[in-house]
Length: 129
Image (cartoon, rainbow, N blue to C red; front, side, top):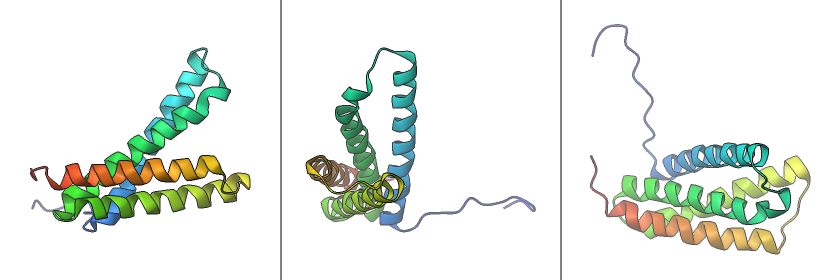
């Protein structure tokens, strides 16, 4: 290593890496939804479906990351990422908007658990590069 260079921090925990990647994908999805609301005729009433899609994609990539890094039991690693992702989203929703758990929340739980577990199964079968 060259003198004076800074090495980027490594996320060694598959679970932590999965959560971090989920949040990154969530931020990207939220930005895209915001742009679509502003630039197109998309109405706020239609956002429930799109937010579920963004949460599902975010959990999928978080599970994929966790599964790839764990190299075994990908569905389990992915499902853990999905559960933690859901808990984080619910806590933030409660603190920011004083929301409670509703039927929509339970649907989101099912979506993120299934998507993250599937992502973990795919991720564990990817070759590390």
